[in-house]
Image (cartoon, rainbow, N blue to C red; front, top):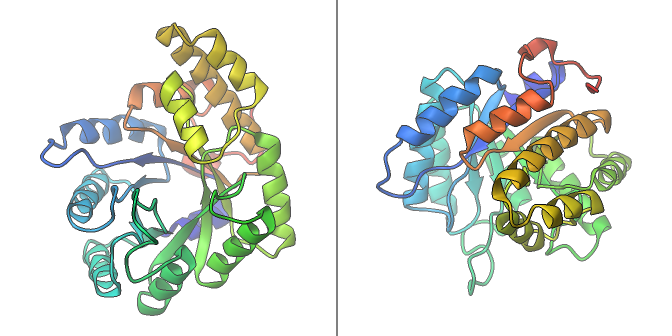
Amino acid sequence: MTVAELLKKKRTISFEVYPPKDGAPLDGIRETISRLREFRPDFFSCTFGAGGSGRGKERNLAVCDVISESGSLAVPHLTCIGSGREEIREIARDYAKRGLSNVLALRGDIPAGQEGAGGGFARADELAAFLRAEFPELCVGCAGYPEKHLAAASMESDIACLRSKQDSGASFVVTQLCYDVPAFERFLERARKAGVTIPVVAGIMPALVYDPTVRMAISNGCSIPAELAAILGKHRDDPAALAEAGTEHAAALARRYLAAGADGLHLYTLNKWKRIAAIMEAAGLSGREGADFSRSAPG
């Protein structure tokens, strides 16, 4: 089954996890995946790791194996950073050997002090085109940026880049974190007007801890709307209260994204299953059956 096929039938629910550090056991990620499977996700994505190639590949594959062994659909991230064309080809072959039929094609974050992607591809659309040409059986997803990628000169140019990813072979989009739903709505409208017809899944990064939330928003050029700023300011010195308020905020964000026309929800878990479970409960999504996931927003 491919993500594109799923999105033709329904809205999807999915979770992002990341590999443990080198040498760390996989027990924690096994528990996270096992617990989150209770919500019947359509797939789990797994990040590739900082810096691209090497051990990042090994840990990515190990976590994808855990996801597949659990009975869930694994969608590995594949980045341009530090990987040449032959290495990308080898990784895609490894995916095929494991029966993986989906991949998220990303440029990835360029390490500090490095000029460019440092591999065989400079941009995600180039990677998508390569994968589509050499591995046509793969369903390729890509990233979208509701508030513009920091490297983009304008929103228009960023939307044009998204259209290029689609034209290069991407068949679905997962967005970067965005706390500003009106910005997501404008992004979606502009993308459709520019000819982007593939499904757009909204990425949700729960705001549960003060410093990481602010740091992630700043580093990705994302705004912190007044509603969220008030939560962060009020509970900055009370981590437990902030986690509770952030849980409710993320649940409301999920409902608002559904109302805004998102084709699915992709929760960035940071491998913290307990809070993600609480968000799913608060959003009214805990009892959702895959094919019965309504296209009308709850609440």
